[in-house]
Every structure is written in C-alpha cells, then in structure tokens.
Image (cartoon, rainbow, N blue to C red; front, side, top):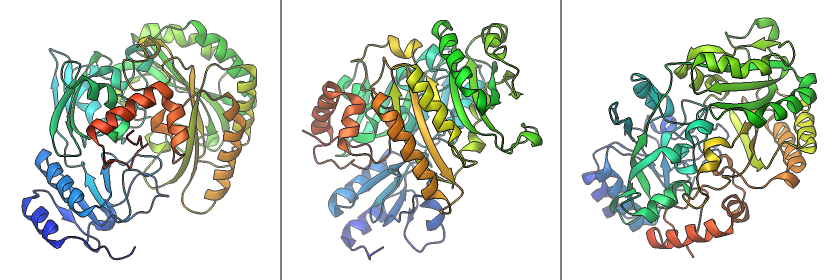
Length: 463
C-alpha cells in the first residue's frame, strides 16, 4: 500500500476527541483488526477507528470529510465482497458497541451496532423470545438487518427488517436521527433493505416473539444421487406447509463434525434443513412426510435448543476461509430449475463448496412491496452459490464451478437478496430492487448522503 498523506491537524483533532482506540498500520493489533470474515479479502485501511459511541462516530466522519478518505463501516465483517473494509481509507469499527437490552414485558430488544446474531439470541432466549435474524451466529446484526435479514423464523415472523421498530442513525453530516414509522419515516423505509447507503445505524429496536427455548429443527440428508426425486418431492410438499416451517435444500459434502458419524464424512449429499417455529409436537408431525420420502442417510432433525439451531452452520462457514459467492431468486422450482440444481450439486468437487436454496413466502410475501426497500417479496426461493477453499490453493477452480452454476441459473433469475450479492455492478443492484424502488432509493440518497460518503456497500448513487 502506498504511503497515505493527510491533514495532520485533522488527525490531531481526531486523536484528541476520539475515546476509543485509533489503530494505525504497523501497530501490534493492526493486522488482526483489519481482518474480515472472508479470507480472500486482504485490504489495509489507513486508520482503524474503534468506535465506543455516537460521539466517536461523529468525530470519525468529520475526519473523513476533511481528509477525503474513503469510509468503510464494519459491524460483524461478514460482507461477502469485503465492503466492511477498505484500502487506504478509514475503517469505522463498530465491534466495541455491544449493548443489548431486552424488555420481556413489551417483547422488544434494543441492540447496538457491534452486536453479533448469537449475542442477541443469547439475551433474548433467556426469556424464551427471539427475532428473525440470520443463519450463522457470528454474522453482524447491523449488516444483516440493513439488507433485509433472512433466517429460520422468516416464514412465520418475516424478515429481520419486518421486526425492526426503530433505529438510531448517524448521517453523513454527523446528525443523529431516530428512524421509525412516526419519525423520519422516509429514512426508516430506506434502511429496511437499502443497506448502509444512508448512514450508520448505532442502535436497533426489534419486536420479539415467543420462540423456544426448544424447537424441532435440523437437517435430514440423502445420497446426492437421490437429488432429482427428493427435489421434486420437496417442491410438492412445501406447497401447503404452514408458515411455521422454514426450510432450505443444500447440496454439499458432509463435513467432518462431531455430530456426524465419521463414516459419513465427505459423503456427497442433498439435505433439507427444517425449522419449525411452533410446538415440537406440531413440528414433528409437519416434518414427518419429509422423513418418510426415503430412508435418510442422516437424520439430525429433532428437538434442540433454538440457540443450537442458530449456530448449526457456524462451523461450515468459519472466519478465514476464502469465499466466492453469487445469488439469485427464482419464482418457483420448475422441472428445469430443479434439473439445474441437481446438475450443479453433482458438479461440486470441493469439501467446502455448497449452495442452499431457501424457501421464501409466508409472512415475507404478506408485507406490501412498497412498505420497505427490500426487493423480492413475491419471490419463491433464493439460491446462494458458495465456492469456498481453505486458502488460495484451488480457489480459482471453485470459482469456475461457481461461474458455471451462475450461467446455468441466470436465465431463471428474477432478482436477488441484496446481502448475498458480490461486486456485480450497478445494473445488478438495480435489478435486485426493481426500477421503482431503486429510483426512490436514489432520491433518498440525495437527501441523506448527496456526496455518496457511504459508497462502500451495494451502492445506490444519488440522482
């Protein structure tokens, strides 16, 4: 990285005013703090500002405006294309902001910008409550929420944004606003699906629901050769399942985990991960037809703590692996789409590469399309192709699997989940939102961030 020159007076002012640590290149903690979840992202910020509150965020933004440095914002660092870091800019690290407050009477929770999904679940489950939030517990709550938030409760209780009651937002000019249905309603509309384009959310308020602490959930797996029959059965079975049931079909090699018999490690499988947001008795009854499809190779769908369900995929997507991803939504699982899904599953030739197909609908589809900025309310399924390796070796080979998979499914895509997008250009972002929503987002961007300070994201430039 070339040497960064900046206004030393501005840096002196920031240093005097900033309460959290300011970490520069060469300092002992720098290399560890600049890392993000995706190991293929190797970027070097000029400065890492570890924010301890709103005052720190405002000071860091003032510094960025004066120096012209690019601004990256990191909650959990899970941005697939690495938007939560930068080269030669200032990284605003929200990790120190870990406050969570649960109100079990009102069934609400307030959580700060550095909270991870598992940390929120731990606090809310102490009262048998939860809000829909993701599938990997070390994901950052902020990024997940701002992009929409799919998860194991979504068909019953909606997306994460459908349970967002309010948010505190620091704008590009350093103004602190509360966004809700009753206050700055246009901003509230935009942050529910529009990503980090309009400001830095410092605290979220969520609606909670009675969930767990024990749920009926888990994966059921069959040999991958049974994928054609399984997927056609699955398509018919989910047509009339209750909203309490959220499922995903996954093609992959079975990982070497303690919960999986050693003789099955490395077996190529097609699995259905099921989660029932209701009583365990009802869940067992509803999922019984899936288990009866054919004798499974592995059946781990049973009663388990909700927090165990939430962390079930953590070891399959750890920090530091090299990931390459792309995603799209499809309207339905037609025979042609199923044939593509099967063929791409059979073509997987790496132990860490996989792709889930999430079943949408339910509560997601009943929210009016114009109520939030999220696109794809009426879509049927989300495909998420994930090519992964331990490091650089073999990475390009897995990317080729990914490219072939994308070419096959692209004619059937009708949109995309914004949190699953890579660096794919403005046309892809526009198509994910649709023209009307995208234009409205551009108007909002012009109002709250006319100079596009917050551009390291799935960027929506101002009109």
